[in-house]
Image 1 (tube, rainbow, N blue to C red):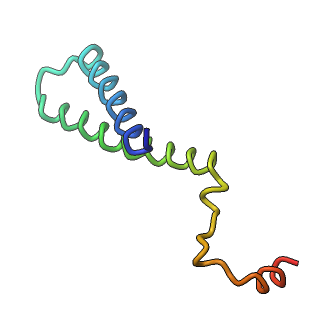
Image 2: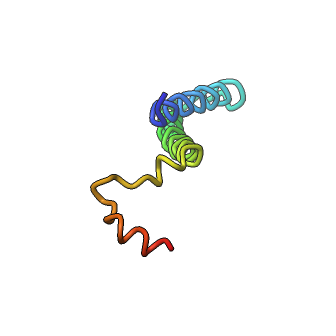
Length: 85
């Protein structure tokens, strides 16, 4: 699964946990719309934050692929020998 989808899954888990906490602990009686807005914001921000963390983890685990240089951007063979020796 890609980082974006994992982020939305994590955001949904956060939103469900927050909804449960609000329903069981806070027990809202008024301003239900504001609480729904809070849950939606938690979903959005949680998904974005989780996506960035997951994306960073994926990049660290796959460092050789991230640091690869396309063949079209590589210097000619002579320049590579001079530069790296």
